[in-house]
Image (cartoon, rainbow, N blue to C red):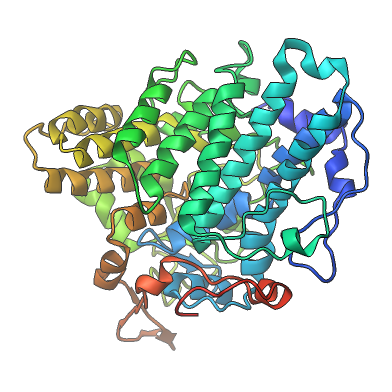
Length: 504
């Protein structure tokens, strides 16, 4: 499919983002600290800086690591990747604080994104170019940067719990660069503050062009994220979750479920009515292609891919009779060039092994397949969760049934108890949102992460001279200390005010 030159991608390609060239890490300070000496004088400077803020979505964390952190860490997938230590450790809840992915991609890239927004928000106040005030553009940019900072902090607080609230990144002052960890709720309070700024300043749409409206922060995206943060925080408030879900569902942006589930991911129907915000990629473009798909899907490469769908997930689709979503999200191949320790330990050519198929076109490390950051089905199911937790399972059922009807499943009864409905919603989210970096958050929010992982009956095998070993039950070693990742040891070494998470 011929891709449009999407707004953000074109900015990245045609207008070098000044913010990238002016940032650097300080050798004696933690990675959360950046400096800049560049002057921001014009509206063009600010727009270029904003493009740099969006560009963080093209990095490792958002291309694939966030999916591994959610689906691999949950009951949805095995690590794959021929047993690479980082992802086996991730799967078994034994990631050491010295892990390089932990520092470079999970913690580091998210703080890079925050730093870009910080610098922009600090600099925009001193730019007097009248073009910034035409049609309220200054306020929109403040709203966009505030949303992006909130989005990255949301990733961090889910991964690590309380983290340093770095809100000013253009200084080497130790009082700013060696901040202690804020509490989880303090981080969520800042996220909410940024999102309220975004709601105030952002439009529902920027006009009639979906290639702009679906890839930039909007009021709908801010309200969707507000719903998600109020569900995820430890002092969750489901009345607020319901309120913000309603704001999305009734938005003048006219969000609506796309009628065909598979088409959401087939490469031809991005920027649809269901999309609230997505990452646009351009096939074959070195700066803006999606190379992450190749890590999940491309068996012809001859090496084992990552995030291998689990037997438990496949069984969940089978139990629900959910062939449409299973066949969209998972594809089976045989005649593979490797042995899979869970599905085909002896490398049987006839054995079928599943792959994460959420994006279908690897295109040789240069895919144009988009990734959804926020979409309506997630928000509808979150609204159902809120209704159920507020004591109204009969109001939750019709919402869940909207999502089920699209894939031809029978409706849930409005007479289900709250407990049964809670289980049904959790399972519905699993089947709908597999490989969209949602499952681990859902298990944690439901308070069942340790229980689910402990009760999994998943096995691995070895093969010697064509003889299959006895099954070895996988011990997922998941306890309450493992709901969060360790703080990178390199950050603790650089910042004596940081305290490690329990259990590490």
